[in-house]
Length: 246
Ligand code: SAM
Image (tube, protein in one colour):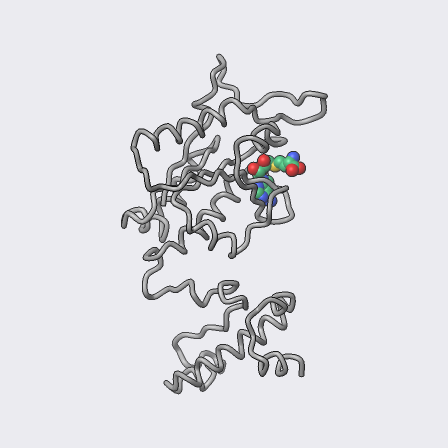
C-alpha cells in the first residue's frame, strides 16, 4: 500500500512514520508512507497557501490551487511509474464535518492500494477541494483540532496495522475491540498474584475451550456494560441474547 499525506507540517510525521510498528511495516516493504508539503506547490511570490474568505468573516481559508497541484503531481508520478494494476487512489479530506472514522472504515480502507490524506488548518478549505477533488471526508470525532495532522495519523495508524504481515504473530487485530463487533475481553500476564490481586483461575488452567468461553463471556459483559449500543448489530447466538437479557 502507498500512503501520501498532504500537510503544511511534514516534520510532524517523521517520528510516527519511522517508529515502532509503522516504521517496521515500511522496512518490511508492506507500506510506503510519504508526507508532502503542499506549500511547495504554491505559485505566488510568498508561497502562501491560504487567503481571506470571500464574503468576509474571521480566519483564513486554504486555497484550492496548491492542494489540487500537489494531488495531480502524485497522480502523474503514479502514471510515470506505470503501475497498471494499482486501483485509483482514495483522496481523503480530514475534517470535523466528515464521516466519523471507525474500525469498519479502517477495514474498508485497508483494501485499497493507494490513499492520499489531506490535512487542513486555519478556518478550513476552499469548498471546491471538497466538491471536486476528494473521494472521502473523515472526522475522528465530534471535536475540533487545530489541524488535520493528528486525525490523519490516527486514521493511517489504524489502517496500516490491518495490512497482513504488519502485526507480528504476537499481536493480532482479529480479536481487537470493534473487529469482532464487541469490546475485547480483559488481559492478564505474570505474576499470577500481585499484591493479593489474582489472575482468574480459568486463565491458568490451560483448558483452551474453557478459556475461549470465559473470554467470550467477558467480551459480552464488557460490551453490555460499556457499549450496549454495539450489541444491537453484534453477531450473537440466541443463547447469548437470552443470557444478556437476564
Ligand atoms: N472551521 C472548521 C469547521 O468548523 O468545520 C474547522 C477547522 S479546524 C480548526 C482545522 C483543520 O483541522 C480542519 O480543516 C481539519 O483538517 C482538521 N480537523 C480538526 N478537527 C478535526 C476532526 N475532528 N477530524 C478530522 N480533522 C479535523
